[in-house]
Image (cartoon, rainbow, N blue to C red; front, side):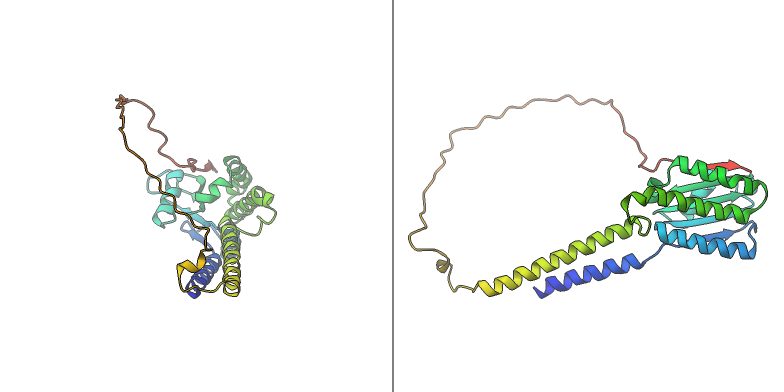
Length: 250
């Protein structure tokens, strides 16, 4: 019994530890577009967005995309950083005068394509004016706006991520299970005492053994050949996240 209790407590502690982990924001201004103060403000707001959404937030500027399109380069950045989970990247490609927003993982189920189109439209004027600090801030603010809009139906969805929500449910379930086990264990100790023999659990005259036999006669087996077809659909090779994001020129 003690081992079960310790195991449940260990799972609860591990769950709490995972819940404390927050995703990070990555700001890489290779094209040197952001001012010093602007970069600090962008970093702080991006960190807050990452913490709220549970997604990695990447903002990257480049002068040369190495021959890749903005769409390809944004995905390449996430791949090279080993970001396979929930993430969103805002890329500014000065060489091609392109910008691109690419969501990945769970956040892609919350930030829709129409939302990305709206974000691109909102930050385009700042991009064309060369106000890149403002453009990055708009990206963060609009992403946060649409995230809260999509998750607000949960009531407290504005304050926790999907991962944290699942952890809370798991901890509650484990706590209920632990209480139930303790109650059953305590009740059993009060009402039940170990008997020395199995016969002690039987009431005299209440157990009757009936002999039952089955006589095997024969069996019939029918074999039918089903022709296989080489045609048919191979299905979709992609997952639920099939969008490559949204972008534009400036």
